[in-house]
Length: 219
Ligand code: CDP
Ligand code: CDP
Image (cartoon, rainbow, N blue to C red; front, top):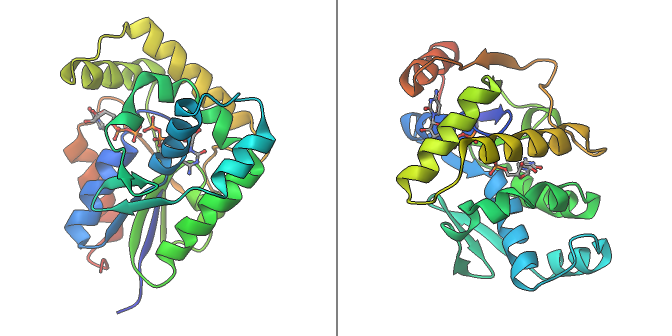
């Protein structure tokens, strides 16, 4: 069977990981959460109290770090950090780490290696434009800033993390800005991406839309 690569990009809270996970399950192929990789490295940098503006130390750290994805969990130097990386402190700092070219090179190398000989649904910011430029399908999910912030607000509330709607909205606006304006592989739709505005659409509606577009080619 030919391998199938599906790229799902978009800004924070657009529904990428929820939709990508579900599509991967339906097609019975591997799901790769590239954001989790940048988050895991950010967790390590913060934990080791490294100055976020000191690129040299961060580059040194990334070269001595292992990041692995397995069954929707992320392992940092063999330790499961899947829950820790979702904390608001990671949201507030991850884009500073993700804009360092050497960090991106290392992450992209790992991502391409995973996808090299298998079918994947990969979500992130630069998958259609840079990581998998020849992907069979490229989707760019988006939604209004208020809806994306409200989704995140509900998600954090469910986990018992208290954060104000306005703080979450500001954090997302700042992160989107940094992700869009960085010099290397910025967030933007690939020229051949299908753009789906998910505002007011349920998760199920978006999944059905994508499955209809992919048809029964999966696997
Ligand atoms: O889930 P959410 O959209 O909030 O974020 P994420 O996908 O977990 O990504 C966290 C951060 O990692 C993003 O804001 C980017 O700064 C960075 N990232 C990236 O630069 N390139 C990717 N392919 C994926 C994430
Ligand atoms: O990965 P990304 O940051 O793009 O978004 P996500 O983590 O998949 O979705 C953020 C939240 O919005 C989750 O709690 C989803 O259940 C929810 N969501 C939604 O309510 N409606 C959608 N159409 C998509 C996601």
